[in-house]
Amino acid sequence: MLSKKIEAALNAQIEIESMSSQTYLAMASWAETQGLSGTAAFLYRHSDEERMHALKLIKFVNERGGHAMVPALKQPQKNYKDTTDIFRSLLEHETHVTSTINQVVDTCLKEKDYTTHNFMQWYVSEQIEEEALARTLIDKLKLIGGDKGGLYLFDRDLQGLTTAEADGAEGKA
Ligand code: OFO
Image (cartoon, rainbow, N blue to C red; front, side, top):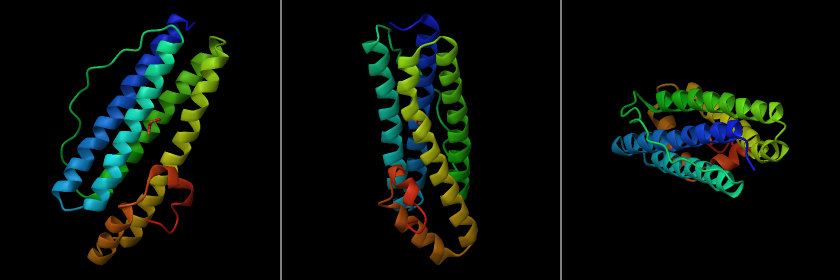
């Protein structure tokens, strides 16, 4: 059985993961309107993954005797300057998500809820991969600079790249 404190912390995390999904969906839509079809495909998949992160939490809360709340969400940012702007803001968002996950882990330890602590470790590792991938992509964009051919290849390579490939992202995007 979850304590009220842990239930509230997990519900707050459900909202954050849902917001991640919405944010990446908005980024995907913007990229698609700019003809950046590879970037859009990557972000649509990323949005789906974040929805799965929220769903995993919803199921866990309910299985442990709590009540998972489906949150109302704010409209995410609609427009971006360019691809670099997208990945910078994605990294900023993920860094924030990492800190909220760490807070949940901290609350688990304080509440001596080792089951939830164990469950949250999956999110801890996931964040390492997602942040690493965002950093790799930003580094590549820095190298490309304003080179249109380079940007074309960058977008094309994102077509098949998933966040799960973060560890091997070097040389793929
Ligand atoms: Fe990328 O945030 Fe979920 O965990």
